Image 1 (cartoon, rainbow, N blue to C red):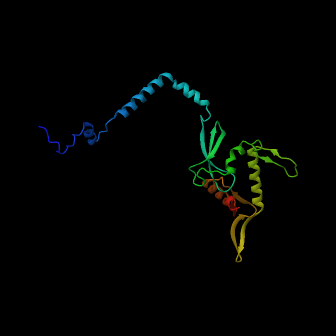
Image 2: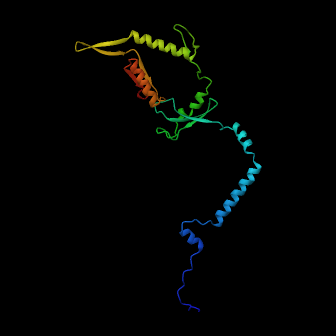
Image 3: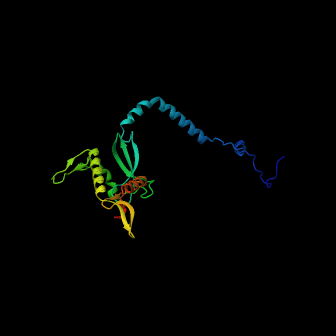
Length: 215
């Protein structure tokens, strides 16, 4: 039976896809199906033309292959800006700002940017140097010899200037210190290193402990 022309139009029945969506099932449209088809076909085609082991072997000689990154701090001023050092085979190949560092957030000043060039400078010393009293030239020595010389000097000065007690209100009070040696920390030292340095300085009886940032 035909309805009169002025009767209201009824809503069409819901499609099956709408019913499946209502039940929590995601319908796959033609665009998604086309993407899956093209992606799968491209993967199969490339697998037949590309030798994956050969590609991995070729990438070993690329500029950024076999790189290890380490975080460090700028060694110039007392800000302690963070840096990321890229190392390959034990050699420094690049440096950049550390965007996760709480101090600098990846920013570097002109001194920090030149840190890599300073590291590779031909004028950079690679070994400790020693000039004997009265000598007019420097000579290269090994790190072990330098550490032993410093240790003997500290021990000698400490023993010669050691103050065991002081008079306070007419009484001898133990102080156990030396006023002849001071310790200076730097911005490149981490919190953990500064803690160890503080312990070592107090153990040696040094009351004068300063930091680079205060100068």
